[in-house]
Image (cartoon, helix red, strand yellow):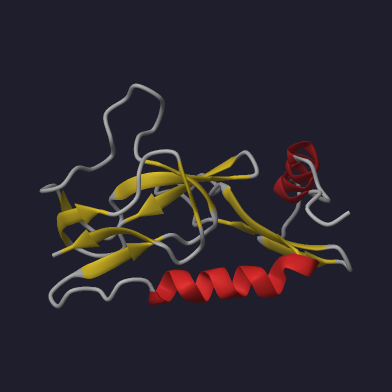
Length: 158
């Protein structure tokens, strides 16, 4: 049925557990109903293996997802002198590491490329969102716990 998720979060966790025990750093599964891409993020500075990120789509919905992604990337022009921090995945964007905690960044904070600015939850996997650039946070463009598309402008940096 269109709209039904073909995999549960437990299914994705089982796939990640299999990958954790193996030598592979990425997996791309495509069926007639869905596509799932799982990739290991970079290893930590202490040599610890990186976590996993994932991206999925329903095959029937891929044209819709592509249109949404294109619309997100074309949303309001980025003002001159500003750099956009964009979502790398679709999901729910969180500005803080946990409910009640301080936000990762606020307007006026200075960031570097590796500064965490939020978390994107996709299918119960929490993926860090980094600034990807240096500068001062000029505007926060999404609300906490807002559903976002890949490519959506999260923040503007000057």
